[in-house]
Image (cartoon, rainbow, N blue to C red; front, side, top):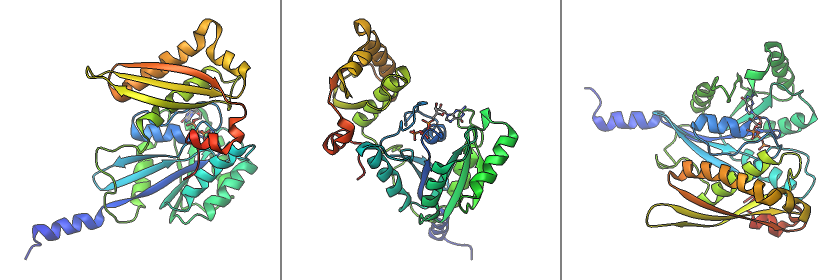
Length: 310
Ligand SMILES: Nc1nc2c(ncn2[C@@H]2O[C@H](COP(=O)(O)OP(=O)(O)OP(=O)(O)O)[C@@H](O)[C@H]2O)c(=O)[nH]1
């Protein structure tokens, strides 16, 4: 006799796969850009400034046969201050607990001691599938890619290698397919309509920080923290949002505000556009700039801004 519908359901459930993949690598290798490309939407912020990612962000990708939770981690680096130490802690904590680790190497940058250090952590992670991902293929020559694969493969054992360009969408679907096929059998952990675990306030703060980094690359690289204090939803559907940009010195405050308030206005306009796309409604964004000397060395401030490991 053919199987009953319950048996068939059980068969389907048995082949459903779910689990976690951590994206790890040096700062600026393209972790957040890959995450956004996979999601087909802007979730994680990106910039050419190293250590853009300060929070771990989880994004959920559903396919017919799998649920993949992608964990974007801060770039691993030699820490210079309490913030740097905290960022490494956030990233390393993820490695202990995931099913798959994707180790990203920038195709255009020489493999160095920093990558070696990250690779050691990848090697000792408990993940059952370790994937080497060579990023930014769109701006690398083929022989550059091959020598990166060779150099990276000597750092640790990888089960497979994939070359991607998140910017051009090259091999982004293959990344999802390959990783999903190595997840353990398991249930859906998250509801279908949930695509990320950050709060609205966290996303707003990250969008504002991205605009500060992208507009003021040279002047205030890592001294900026952003906190979103309040989002008020009005009855007519618009949102009134207030956020504070925190810097370490008066001089930096002047730079962020700009002559006649020009810079902060530009940052606000750019961030508001992203936020309106995210919330799909009209938004008013009120930005303030405050000085908190040496906040990056102060554990309480790091905690207040939410950039700490759990
Ligand atoms: N040409 C090209 N540039 C890329 C690609 N992926 C990322 N980038 C650029 O590389 C820079 C860093 O990218 P991110 O995604 O912010 O890097 P990250 O690894 O998340 O960086 P951290 O947050 O510092 O850890 C940005 O300027 C991106 O636009 C790609 O596929 N091709």
